[in-house]
Image (tube, rainbow, N blue to C red; front, top):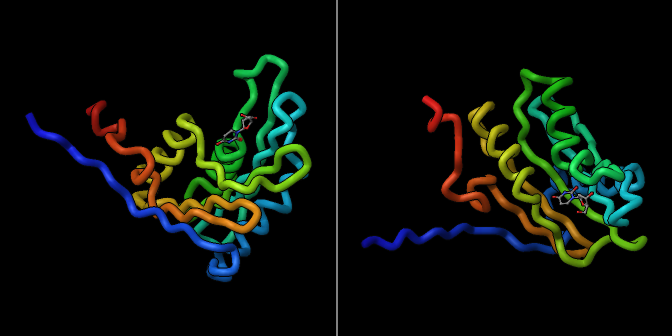
Length: 159
Ligand code: THU
């Protein structure tokens, strides 16, 4: 029997250490937190998507009294980006969150369903999507969703 080890390099840094481009995306994400619709969880999430034409698309979580009908910030932003700019690669996504009126102190990683959608985006555009997870001061930078979604299920299995 073989043991398959899975590991990934995830960068942890202060906000002040971010590149100008990454900081701009994080700030764009934070600026849209106010547009989240999260009356049930009180947990507002915002995602800013950077396209290869320089356009930034924003999305926030949109909850529903029938909870499965709501959508996470990442999927709101990615599906909107794909709908508006189907030909443009998604290069990066910055994700931030607000709980009980304050920016969270620990960065939140995308949920399982959003990871699968980000994987589809990487496959579709043959390009890794850099994730910048930001909290009050701390950030995590992940270079590809495959780093946090190993043993991926892709369309390769369908052919
Ligand atoms: N949420 C997101 O928007 N993105 C994530 O990756 C995790 C969770 C939202 C869904 C729900 O509206 C709220 O956060 C609490 O789960």
